[in-house]
Image (cartoon, rainbow, N blue to C red):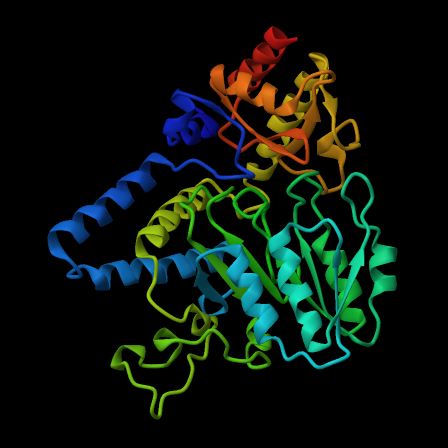
Length: 388
């Protein structure tokens, strides 16, 4: 059995569905289901007796998240979702009236609203218009940054177009002009390597329920250690303090790590599920550029793209002919239309054929993972052919 068939066997959903919705919510691997079930059983029969073991699982997740990013565990905070990670930095950053933040205009609302809310504090939000394919003209980005710009925020992978930004070039532009970089990494982590030693982003957030195949409500926030002391201690709670389990404020300082932003009680069931899923993906090399994991995702995505075009689909966004030759900008996301057919009606037909995907901005969207294979793609093409 080859590497990718082994991964596919880890995914119970592959027995029932051709699943193409990883850019929305990923399915749970079998081992994560078992880990969550074990937690539920323990909580049911023993209450909080196993709490130290659950907490140890959270600590292991910080280590694995750090391994995923080439970071240190102290640079990782466990958060419920990407949105809270973004809001944490938006609130904690030492803004002054007259500062500016720069971001693409097509960002997902979670990476737009927290920055727009800063306008009431005198922070200007500058929006850079992307190209039709979702790409960011780096010259336009550089032009939007000036001496007032404290932060550039952008998605690593566009949720609709699937365009994957060159974060190294973005960091070079921003840092050269004295600005820091925040990355919404939710549509890339789990399938594409990102090493913060090579790509010097300052902050990143990602929920685990998409490509990392975890349950909803569990993710992490990366804060480069050199930036930590520049941030304010916002959203603080008992778990933000050193010796937090003494449950007193007097004489206690904040934790000297990103975990100071975890605040209160943990979602242990979610963190245990995410820890199991992420551990599995790391075993298969999702963080290693040499493992072939990202290449596998791009290969199955190219096959799906070619098959869609062969059955009459029209790509919603202009893309080069060969995603593998996109100079690092391709991802596992494809948006397409079937001319003369309503996308929601098409989606309902595909669901009845055992295929799950999404509709975004009026177009059908598929998002392929490394365990997807040719049988999934053929199933999609056959269902579309029957409709047409």
